[in-house]
Image (cartoon, rainbow, N blue to C red; front, side, top):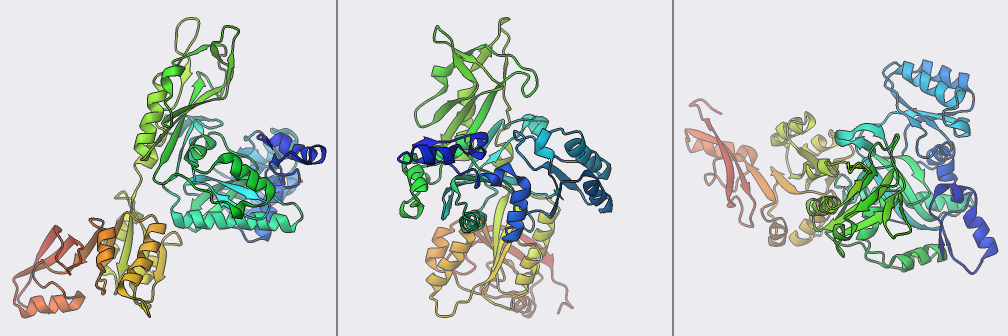
Length: 536
């Protein structure tokens, strides 16, 4: 078997030549025709639009004046991204911040040939916002199997500052890609492979989908026809199935015949060790010290990139990005700590004994501060949800609502869910012909696919099953419109009527954990209000 890695030999037809010259040797990678998904961004944009796969609004241009006229026709606040269509070593994308910069970007690519022949065709596309994710899929020419999503860090310096690089670190699975989004992206990759096969250019190998998770759902930014660096260093350590067997199935068109498994509840983080000065001028030839101490079986792996060995057996720096140190743990935090533990043992010493090692100290930092994901279950108006929606929208709290479920088709809480956009799964689930346990299992399936950490019941008019309460123990709360334990068991207006009829002098709201016994779980917080004599 030959596994072809870089894009240039793939685009230039190495797999085609291998299949002709060595028919008994498996060649893992797309043909030249299939590799057009990376070789030509213009081809890919047209392909995505033709087959209804979400991507940013765009136009392709081969004439510079037509491109400039198009930019001038746009509104001033309509931000664009300008791309060279061809291969440009990952550098063919310009992100201007206004119309004048957009016009200059077009001139740089098409007139000044900043990226050479790669810019003969130029793409101008709408600027999208949202988290980015790198999604790699194994493909056998007929179908695709998505690997856990990763997120990388392109900028050279902490806090995403400095110049763009080939990647200074990554982590996987990416918390922003819920199981629901993972399934959607996998369907996009499957459709891509199916449609490529219909064109007579079956796609075999790894399809790398660069995704933007917008408020309207996931959009394809670009395709690469290969493994990504440093994403591969965090995705493959999580693979449980033998990699050779996966490659073989891809080459033989039998991907649907093998069970591709990734390690459950495991995470990986990689930190790139670069030569000081990268991605600009940097030194080479420094001895790399600490390598034997930096790795440990199954926990810390050190991948070599820009290294070489001298005649005395010493490992020397021989590039900009020199090493990638990957930690694997049962949480993202532990994986990140292990990666940095490995990095702490390594140094690049120059002739003056000055350290010439550079790395970012904030890989996965943002993911470690991920928002709490809330799933909402309600049967009525969902009025108590409004303050939470507003605080989420204004980013006043590190929380996001990812699912709203109701057992009533006409419940107004569903309208509130829909108003938050497509990234919030809003769904009515009918209980017809389902036992309580079956209905709750259906709800749990959706909630877990949406990555829910905590459930909030808002006027939910169903008794929860014991199995549901056990599964979501201490992760399910209820908002009750009285000061429990008073007036337990009632709903909404009924509770307020009961408060007035009992001539209570105060009432309020209780948030409590949910147990199988209605309104009897431990109280988290209560807020009181005075009941006036003329209340109705």
